[in-house]
Each structure stands twice: as structure tokens, then as C-alpha cells.
Image (tube, rainbow, N blue to C red; front, side):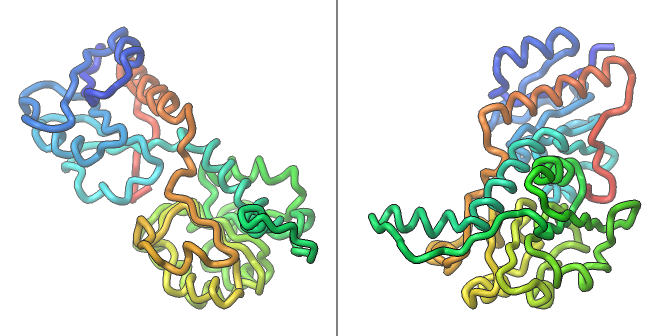
Length: 306
């Protein structure tokens, strides 16, 4: 079977040629007229333009599945046509996001932002800036999917005690309900949960108050999991430190206190932005099309929002 696959016009030529070996490839433009909905469509590749892809998807009377390039698909769940399977990009972003998490943990624990501020000011600070290493530190991984596992693999060599927490308890994994007993002993909390009704606003004032003074909160997931006002208050009070790749709202407004707060690291949703990101995304597409050509089930199917 040669599946009918719809891809964005911007698909790299080499990737298109590779797909054409195993599929019938159709191209849709980033704007203008939409395709004829009578055409066959087994898989629609949204890549990073999910808005345009959903417009295209709405035209097809028969569409099998949509493949996104993001690991989180909360923003499009309610827009996917009925009967169409949605697949996320779990696995594509594991390495770069895990590296970003480890990078910011080390940078914050060793007070790198303060040292860089001194460098920019041309000041050799002689007073001590007390940092800490990760040996025997307690790191709570809030979310233990593919990215969570990648973070754990990379952190293990630094010697922390790692506690895993997820929405569903299982062997070696605590449930969210156990957080009140876990947070008071956490030196670092890393958020890698999907955004769902259950997790929206999970990190509120009570959550932050339960963390010990000087602890670090890292968010590499979705900004709306955290109550931004409560977080800002805690950071400005010097109670906790924070590393954010996502915010609510996003982007963080100009002049927001978190931009310049001591103890805050903020990056503009770039944790997964590395040179090989697109290559990994198209490899996932090729693997998915290979499955279709063999009559196999697709991977990364989104069920119950994740």
C-alpha cells in the first residue's frame, strides 16, 4: 500500500524525495486556496503550522490522521475533526529539552546568571556567591514521559536523589496527590507534564509555599501549569529560584518583573530548538508512513489529551 500523505509546501526536498519512495505525496500551500476535499488523505503532516494544517484537514471527507511536530498538542485537541487520529511528536524533542533542563539546573545552582551579570558590568566580585552542587540534592521530576526519562538519564551522573511524580501512580512513581509530602524536601522541581484540565494551575501559591526556601522550579512544559502571579511573588520575595522556557502569558509581557528578577532564568520557548530538530521530526513522519504502508498502527497516538 502506498499511503496518500499531505505535507506542507516547505518540506525539505530530500525529505519529500524519501517519502515519495513509499507514499503518494501531496503538497498544501501555507496560504491561499485549500485542497479539493475529495482527494484521498491517509496522513496530514502539520509540521509546525498546525493552524494551516487544521484548515486543510477540515476540507477532507476522509482523513486518517494528523501528525504534529510538537510533543504537546493541548492547543489543537478541540479542533481536530471527529474521527481523525492525532499523533504528537513524542521522542523528537527528548534530547534537546532534557539538555535545556540540565543546563538551567546547573546554571541556577551554581549562580551563573549572577556571574554573567558581573561580567557584563565588568566587575570581579570578590564576595562569595554561594552555589551548590547536585550531589545528594533532591530533584523531583513532575512528569515521567519520554522527556522525563531523558532528564533522569542525564541528571543521574550528578548524584542527586530523584523522585518521580506523575498523574498516575505506578512502581517507582508517586501520584500527584503525594506532592504535599514530597515538596518540602525538594531542592529542584522540574515540570514536564502535559497541559490538561487536571494540571492547569497545578503550581499555585500553596504548591510554591510548600517548597523550601532557596529551591529551584524548572518549567519546560506549558506555562499555564504555573500560576504566574504566585510564581512572581515567590521569586521576587527571594523564596525560590526559577528557570522558565514557557510562560503564561507567552510571550512574557515587556517589563514583566520576571525578566529582570534575581534568581530567574527565562528563555523564549527554545528548549527544543536545535539544528537536528526538523530532521528528527521528518524521521518520525517517515516512520509513520512506513507503518501505514505496512498496514501497521501509528505511533504517538494522542489519547485523553496526551
